[in-house]
Length: 384
Ligand SMILES: [Zn+2]
Ligand SMILES: [Zn+2]
Image (cartoon, rainbow, N blue to C red; front, side, top):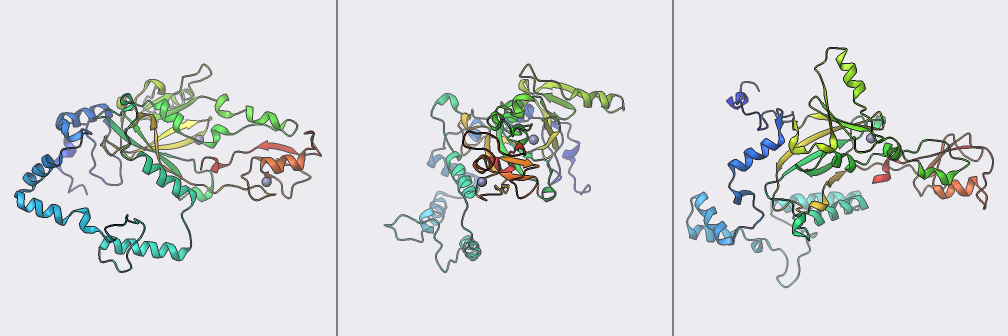
């Protein structure tokens, strides 16, 4: 690989990512400068959301391809969508229908997939339907108010946030969410977009006062968190209760001759201010020890087909699915409580939905029956 490495690797301009190695991270670069470099090199029409007039487009295309107007007209009619029609002209197309004997390679592949899926007898579940719907609603979406338009020449980052591998079954498959954010978003906005069950975990035993439980949510109690990018800890300091929880690591590193780390505030740091490597694993830490890998997989300029409504960002484009743990009694609803030392339960500990939990453990007046300890439970699949 090293032999084929072109001379660009010695290019002193570190503001352009180096994609030489596939599957490995880029060199470190400054996102704001990267954007500037692009904008200096491109013509405004290259990143404009305005659709080029058809005739202008055709003329430019013909010129770039070195073909005459006649050839261009021929190409246009041959490659026209109308020539791909496989349904009667007077009927609206059914896009899910593939003709029985397709000759087009894409249709052959699609037919194969369709037949395979039909043989599995699995229909689209609600998650797939939701994902389809989300995509349909956001692709090329324009805002209602002009002020909410993502400006032309803005950068978009693709951010993968991974979930801690606390279960053995996640050792090989790392569940993650993928978010799109713009260069002007702050790290605090990224933090707020990350849904993790440990933020919702409720600590304590509530068998005597089950109605009190929802008032204690970890996120309200322990607000400190940080991101770590390239030697800098970006702490969340938005609230008076926030503490600099990176200081322990910084002090520890000092006594062991590690390179010096520094601190900054995540609410004051926008993505365009950051220097980082694309494809490199960084860290998000909250609730003391809930650690998530964060990988920026792409940084590019916006395009007219992007979602252009600022209000829909951070935009969720992928979400992992987790099987939910059901109530041990009804096997229908997601578990909300787990009990221990419970004389009514078939197992110890035992998981109950709210309804079954209350029906089994309290009388009509809400008085506790028998002996047990009850802890609120937040399912990993609560955000599905
Ligand atoms: Zn977490
Ligand atoms: Zn139940």
